[in-house]
Length: 98
Image (cartoon, rainbow, N blue to C red; front, top):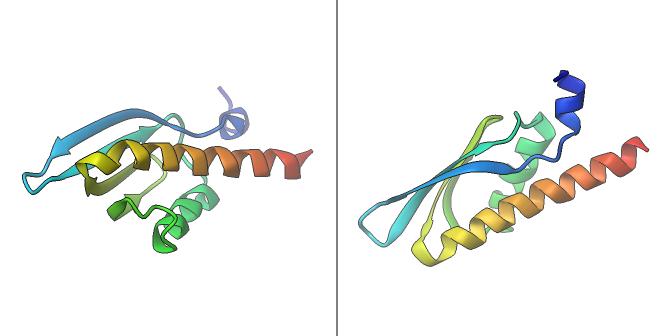
């Protein structure tokens, strides 16, 4: 697959692992279905810094993976929020390109 075509696929978390931390929180690590563009990484970082991901206590993202610390009952919501932010960014980019 060409890098241009790969960049057009909507990014999403395609593999997820969650580890119990013992204090009622979970460490969640996810791999993306393709490397994120710099703008996509920035969108996720900005969302966490701006409290758009209030369920997340700590957050790291790079082009290949995302990791975060959240309370047990907040992990599923955090995954949904991350995928929604990526999908919204992809839809916005596709509209700009057309």
